Image: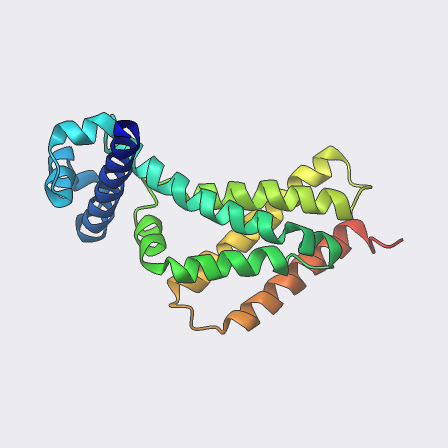
Length: 197
């Protein structure tokens, strides 16, 4: 029983530290945040911080990892739909919805991109999952072609998403999804031809 309450307490402490860190990150940027600032904001002592994280960078990586794991779970839940269809939309739409639902946290991480690996993590997630999907649909691609094309798609889609986000999501989501689908299909056709042939 003591182990369960200890685990619950540790989870609570990590949650408080992450919330305090994100609040501070919104206010003053990563380079100006100290362990003391985070501990004070989370209302814990510095020793509690060091029980969970060696430094502020590790805490930022943990926040990013949590968000990327949630995004990967969404992709996993919709991957089969994308395999069966002729579109990346079943994968891209849940990612857009995730960004919208976590708008404040994403904006904060994007704004601190020089010290955050969040955008790079999203690109890596898109590249790995896009590669799995593209390899199934276009089996004639060489490994080199597959690598370049999946990178092109991943960076293109994350660029579209970040631009959409930076512009206050003024373009309707449906228009963004249609545009992204046409761009990816056009590039795929130019490189690979019709996958049915």
